Image (cartoon, rainbow, N blue to C red; front, top):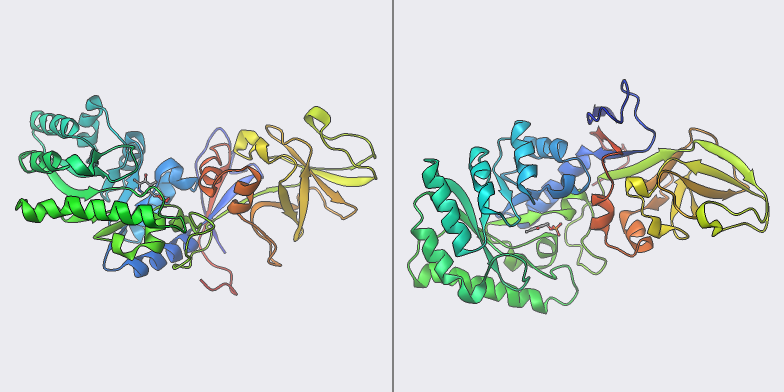
Length: 395
Ligand SMILES: *Cc1c(COP(=O)(O)O)cnc(C)c1O
């Protein structure tokens, strides 16, 4: 495998020497995951969701990679993410999924970002701003079918659809909604949402309105479990990164994790029985143990909440993190095994012998979901990109 690029983080990396704690992103895995999703939903298209630093994988690098794969659409949550992509030369259409404020609209238009119109009033603001700037806004209408977050309610969507027809400075390119629990085993609420979305789409026929080309509803859960929700496009988030949205979801597409989080041993010592480790002295051994210190902590997104539960892999074996997780360091009990300064420590990922720690494991230890683990690996962690699969690895 060849190392490709270092994300340029001048405050962290120094003459190309990167802190030993890093996230390695495997672009070949992203490719395979993207193709697997594409194949599963065809002829529907795949919008790659890149919000929150591409689920921790690096916004700009993942966007560039998706562009080389020919992804027809990218999705981000907020305006700033879209502007950053445009400023780095990304030309693929970008849908900003979040709610907007009127004063942001000129920036959307300047950067050719597709706007989510979540109410009649917002659509009118977009129309007025586009007219004033002598341009045409790209718009997707947002219907609330049961998430109660943003969007016009499905039962009063007609006015939004009518307004769209009479907004000559808006190119209403799409219409979409969002599932609240498409990753659950019980899909009854998703079916209800699907039915409500179809009800809204039916206005186009009954009112003789021109149809927007892009209807989209499915997130990762919908991609996996609700083929009826694929419509013209799906919005693939966590699945693209090789992680399933929940434990109970049907794994109808095979994907594999594209992120490995690792560090190195920076300190080795022997701890006397009865000598407690770390803040608050919450853990001590009743016998002599060997322990190593690893430079990662909650200041990197390695949640303190995992104290007393987390494990890491050193030399192919899982060992417990002992004592409280600090801001920048953790202590690992290796009992009487050997480890040396510079040894690789896997926080998320697989060792050569197959021993593995997943972001689902970290989510369980932190009592959260894998999404929160990935998106909290913060900018202090350098991202390193590799492109290639191990010889014996099939995807
Ligand atoms: C985040 C998000 C997605 C992607 O969700 P996943 O569960 O990660 O696939 C899709 N659509 C919208 C509107 C989102 O906010």
